[in-house]
Length: 366
Image (cartoon, rainbow, N blue to C red; front, side, top):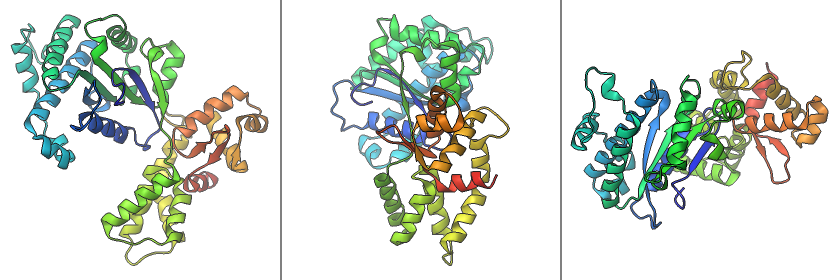
């Protein structure tokens, strides 16, 4: 992202795997004043599940509104404070009035007849606002903007979804004034993935797609060590090994296991802790397993493939295809989605291994 922030990227992962945290990390690294990359992008994080734009004009307004608010926040906080107090910096958000004030100053003529039209921008007004803002950003040593769009699957559920994707692609493909100074990083899960497969979204066709997965064992140990140091608690090797085994290096499950251990007074046995974790995560795992076939969880095919995998522990798509009598393509597709939840992991030799023993035990009890 630091080397080439003005591209289109899509980050796919299941619930609780860290998509929002990843976007926050990208945001901070792009803002880092010590960055030496020649073309810096000013990051703007937008949560579409929270914003819920009503249509394309409203989406355009929100992009400019959050961009202007982020710039105002950047101006108000000294660089030394940004380095030392990142969370405090993120909390210093100026209200939406700054956007309307900027639009007036930028000679963008809007028809303020009601609350709805105040929050809409057509293409011409969006372009003018974006170009004027990028001129301003160059004075702040940024060469453009990267919108970090969390919860992008919200758009795919709207009737205007393809209009939005086609519009954003047009900005990247044919708008010579904008395309070189605009980056997009969208996060989502299977709704976003399947929308591309179903309709061939024009934006997703030019995107670089990345999947998040479970952490490495080394990174998980580092996470455990950092948390233990913060809590001023020493964990023995057996406890650490148990956390690694039962979490499968899933970041959320690791954090929750640590929370339970740190809150246990007096210390409970590890068997008791795993029982508590199974109880604690019942709703999480129900959502992942998704017996009710709601959006965002496993499908029946994926449940079948996972159940086959836990019988073999480590195996290849070809072996799973023989075991399930599915096509190899169907198995590979299912494994990609399951790995995106972080409960299994893949290796360089194209084999897959069961990760979280906690989720595995929950499935066996169903």
